[in-house]
Length: 557
Image (tube, rainbow, N blue to C red; front, side, top):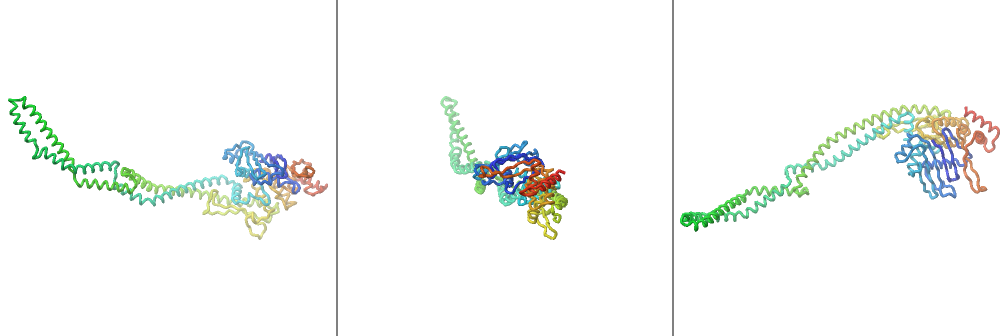
């Protein structure tokens, strides 16, 4: 609830410090005394639109500070925690308005954005007037109020979780389906490439081995003739081995008689014969090595051509073809597996959608049932407010084709102000005074749920009097048993029921050169005088004071 309100240099308010308590507080005063200024200042602290014209003439800046007492589980505390701000005990909202139009916002002396201040202010205070029923403008608010009346908040939270799960499943399905479509566009190419490379069966290092073998075969073909000539010279018809062998035999026969002369020559000739035979062996081996099948060379060249053509086609080195073939094969496996994954995601999305749909339909049925109860509860409040011929209707329009986080329903408050007239949305059909009374009836019915802890009613009793004003006062007082209520009023019947009565007035200072707004908390005697003034007008009579006494006594009974 609002505990304290301090205003500095806002329009006609020079310095103002007010304290509030639980219950009904009324603000009264002459027209033009500054009641609207006070509310404008209060709205500024709650995140309302700033304006340089709010700064008091002669001042550089104005400032409004509102101190609230809230529980740890209050939505405002959760917003603070989400923004990394402390929310222990009191919550202090402060707004500075500069003369050049700039504003600054603070919560617990920590600078925040105006949007954050406004979000928190909306959870703390609702300000309602004949032309500013902001809580009723948005149909989403109507849905929230119906849910609060019916106690469906947990059901709504469950639907919101199912909606989030449904959205997550749907998003995963859509993303996978999109990737599958992209893969499908490439699938034919991948399959063709994979089949082609699988058929080619490239091996790492194969090009180097084939190229070396091909080079060796081509070089061998060139030197084979020289090798044959050399072998013919060593072991062919022109070979000296036979002549040398015959010479060795003749010398060996002479060696018996002259060994010293013959033996060295024999040994040397034997070595030459051995060397020639060894050379013949090497030449034979070389000729065998150079001997190749021309078909093998053709096959090697064809293989090299196929490998290098594939390398050019797929823009990769020949040694990278094996890895590329493995990659393409893996991609195809993924495509095939993706089809299975798609089925799983489709099933998951269908399950999530079915769960959400079932919960949303169940919630819709509960809303429809609760709407009738809300209608009856509001109707019970209308007759004393002189709206006995009016009808209040909670329209619950369900559309399974337009689901949302809070279900499939659009909830809107409709009214029929008089028999025979066409029902329609309350904001469009009801007049200003009727709208205020419908609002009050709703708030009384929802006094313990669906409301901010502080409600401000700005002259909702305008244009009514007597029994209607008394009924409004009674309902404001009843509403104040559950929430803190502040009411700007011109009705003495409303003022008489207040727990706290604030009188707003204007004082002339500096010999009438400037005017300031004052706010005084009235004691019992002064309350009686103010209520008598509200009854009588400019001149307070004894009859007016007696009537004021009767109102105060009736309110206290």
